[in-house]
Image 1 (cartoon, rainbow, N blue to C red):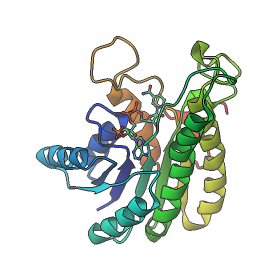
Image 2 (image 1 turned 120 degrees about the vertical axis):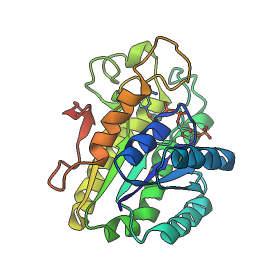
Image 3 (image 1 turned 180 degrees about the horizontal axis):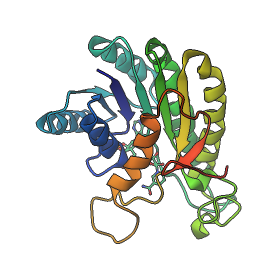
Length: 241
Ligand SMILES: NC(=O)c1ccc[n+]([C@@H]2O[C@H](COP(=O)([O-])OP(=O)(O)OC[C@H]3O[C@@H](n4cnc5c(N)ncnc54)[C@H](OP(=O)(O)O)[C@@H]3O)[C@@H](O)[C@H]2O)c1
């Protein structure tokens, strides 16, 4: 059985939990990873109710110890990890360069960029133990230069500057570096933008249904062995960087 771990999959209405459900439906053993233990317990129970094989770990991207403990826990259930979805992120400030509080920039980079990097480092040995593995870095068109709607050069949806966008720009660069380095172990690494997705849990009329956004991520998590690596995609289509 293949095993997939999804970070930040504790919120019921979030993209991460939807990815977990879609991978569970494809027969993957799911590891819910979230920083709130109550969420972990609830989401694992929901996956089991759906008939899926599921476990959970408390994992805070900003806490090295919790990542190491999560790696140890996962080793009880499988000697390898087939899929790592780096989904957890914070949205940070949407203020001008001058007004943005640098402490908030630091916090956003600690989670979205350094946290993702460190989670990948620590789970890498398990990923390399799989015959072939997939890493999906959940990114955003906001981190692209060229995305015509959300991109940095094209207005970022009218935001003055977005710390969030800059963390995703960094994630896109890291994706390329990971892909090059990890190809020796047959680990495919891609960045995916799920598009604007309604993960509020309410019918806001803004953003597409979470199931559709999650499909974009699941596509990259279930690529064939000869699939692409080092790319940036939405709905299976390449996005400009
Ligand atoms: N929604 C969109 O329109 C959209 C568009 C493009 C890209 N994305 C990306 O999609 C991913 C999921 O977004 P979402 O909309 O589903 O938002 P979300 O529900 O807020 O999911 C993000 C999750 O990350 C978790 N998280 C934050 N900091 C963490 C930390 N230090 N350690 C562990 N977990 C942490 C949050 O945990 P808590 O529940 O404990 O706060 C939350 O459950 C993100 O990477 C986001 O950038 C979303």
